[in-house]
Length: 189
Length: 176
Image (cartoon, rainbow over all chains, first blue to last red):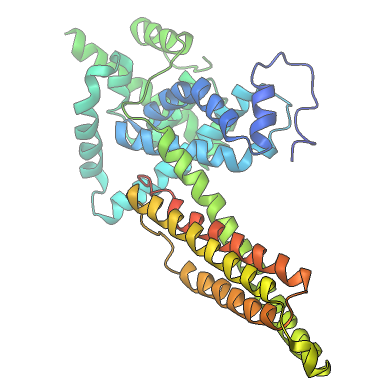
């Protein structure tokens, strides 16, 4: 399982040894990986989900999927970079599933946004100003803004990850900035 | 960032701060237990799949041993059916020892408040026990058969391992 992994020596990656062991089935090593990275993953997922409970569940799913797919890590980038990609992908997939379930519960459209805002409002004491404002953004717009503006992904990659057009990604960022600026000006008034 | 839109100092400052900070947030609850439970459950699932293979093998092997043993016994002189008393006594002891081990294991699980999780594994457990009974009967006819002795011990160990799987199956974690 580990034979194909981590042949690159171009990165001074502190996770390499742990990943090798975990890929070989060492659960203790995987726990060490979790301890090293789960706060960062949770931080990313919390921004995308804008809901503590959902973020916790999705973070669990990220690490479960990571355990199943460790052998796919080839060492072509730092492990933390690869994990970020995995976390983003799993988070979007899982949050989409949750959104569909919410839609089935007929919490569609404005009701859903209000529902999300209501959920987030309870947690907002732990969030900074920007994160609090992000929770007001519609779901996909928030994802695009977080991935492009905060996580530094190119529009092409965001579009690919979310299954939308590049133009849509750009437009969503533009619209998100407009809304955020508007809300900031309200707060300043 | 690469946004070509109109720049707003305050928003840009917030974005810059957000991108520069090492954003690490500690989840309110311990997430590892659920992750570990799910991983273990996945491994149990794999074990369960493998159980089907070795149980099939067990049943087939037990049947072969019994058929071969009966055939061999019938072909032998009836005078040779005189059994070795010491070996029969040993057979009884082995089975009793296994029953004691099983009872201790079950008592420990019950004391720990554990309940068997896979009711569907009960059928496989019954198959194992049935195979052990068959092999025991065959050993009464052929007590010098060392392979049968080894096979009986193997069946006993598999039963204990299966009981551990049934009782130590982790609890479910909060699903997404």
